[in-house]
Image (cartoon, rainbow, N blue to C red; front, side, top):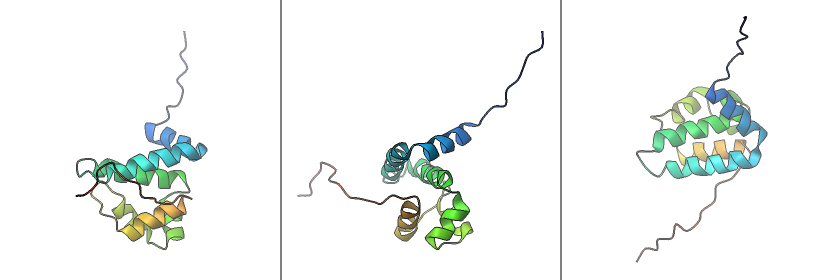
Length: 110
């Protein structure tokens, strides 16, 4: 009996395709990624999620060009050890057709 082996799609490629196809999912995904940036233990995951959203919306080179950044600096900023500036975050978020917003976190300073 001859078995047919189907080409596997990597998790990352499937995730990029899903985020490209579903804008509302990409918005929710990016919202979670940005919240992860607040916690130092989750920052790397948040940066990689932001990078995945950028890949889903044209790729890092295209996003860097739209955002007025060099491709290398965007790769570095969105790496697990990256430390993007607010300018970089805003540029990427705008380049993928989204915007940042602020909301109360339920804790009020005394």
